[in-house]
Amino acid sequence: MAITVQARLDDKTEAALKKFERSTGLTSSHVVREGIQLFMDTHTKPRKPFKLIGQGEFDSGLTDLATNKKYMEDFGLTRAQREARLKLKKRA
Image (cartoon, rainbow, N blue to C red; front, top):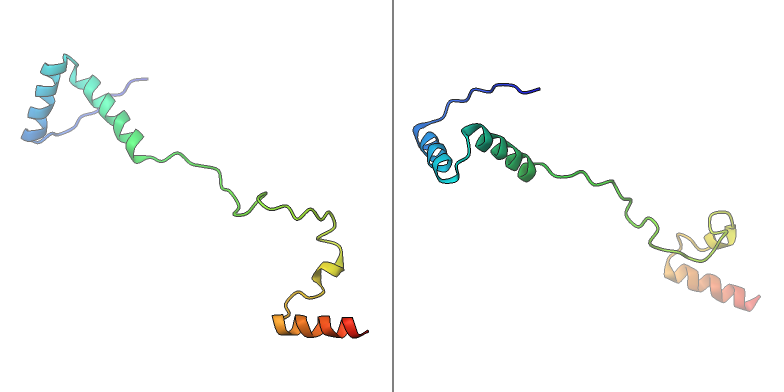
């Protein structure tokens, strides 16, 4: 369905439109339609799907990483605490 659009052009824009019509042989309607399409193409960005950072990029190779508690033993310890714990294990 086609609609009619009215627009007020200043003298400079009207002169540019008429000059463009003469040089290309296109109608003002065609020029305006192409201009709107060009404007839409340059001012709208295609939406990309969201991607979680790091998703699928790392594979530890451990199939029970989320359920096996031994992987969480030293979690949260400082390096010094980890080394002290390691020394105690070696003594025992």
